[in-house]
Length: 108
Image 1 (cartoon, rainbow, N blue to C red):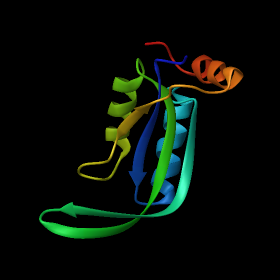
Image 2: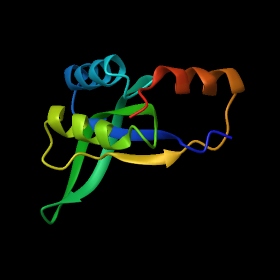
Image 3: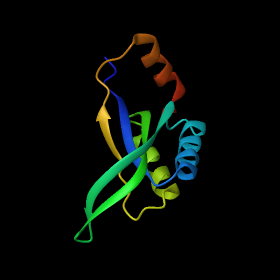
Image 4: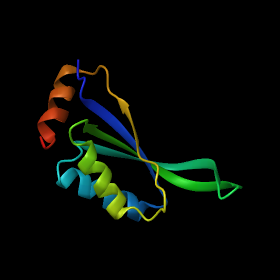
């Protein structure tokens, strides 16, 4: 069971930001893989107004030990005042894929 693996979710405003963050996280071994999901609509409250934003979603395969560095790096690169950066635990997965994720990450 891959108890220390996580999928981080992060929304971004455009393809340029998505590529910049994805490339940095993978090249720095903070993420094994980043899927860029295009064209999502986010509806949220911000400054007492209901906002609608066309965004992209990053699905980031990472680990709990890498989380502090990953979070800090996204905050460095992200243009939003308050970016969405949350994680969900990865409970199960195909054994060879899980092994690949673990072998692709730094071990801080």
